[in-house]
Length: 289
Image (cartoon, rainbow, N blue to C red):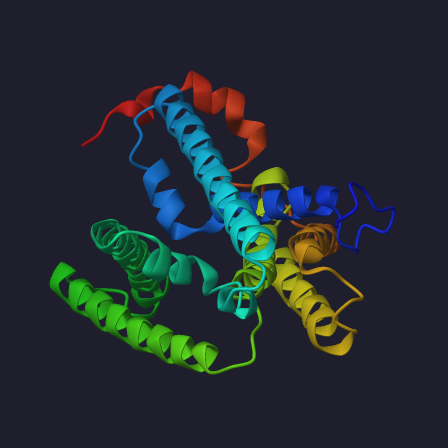
């Protein structure tokens, strides 16, 4: 029942869903450790572009399959079997209900095993990324000299702590009144990734961006998003607009503060989109030591 386009860009529409999810994905590609670490394994621009294109095609194909499954489940339970008990099951549980009660026993086991395997892979990637980010970006700054053995130990403890915290959050969510985990997840990603992605986007599109601008971008966008999330009516702003708003506020406020604080030092070489021609012309980074 969504409109194709609504002049009020803060209201739900197909256009806003596409744009909002697109900016959320852009933020993840710009700032998410599990994606960025894949970029660093490529040896030249051609291989990097190939990796991005392949990932994009596979992601679109996977999303299409998931949406088709959802459409099929809706038709099966709301149209063909509208009187069944499953018609009142929460939408986040309907797929598992279908697997448990409509598929043959052997197929059910294979699908459940595949789901658990995929979940384990995703969780492992997330834990490793958080542990790596903490160890290299924070702990190395706090503790100037650390051995690789100590870094490994710290990463293991961080992984354990984040894992336990995630389990706690999952238990709370399972017993909360959240109607849709999918909507909650997209809302959360729009909030968090939009804030972080906005700072990264500011850094790689502007040579004038500086430390003060980055801090200001993060603080101002956080205040704006907290106000929208907790002080405005839930229907005032669609959660699909969160990433658009947070990125826009981050870039604008960060750039203004960077200019006002008089940044006289240009951005480091090969760190902005303005350096792309030089990056393509330089082949020295293709050599791996």
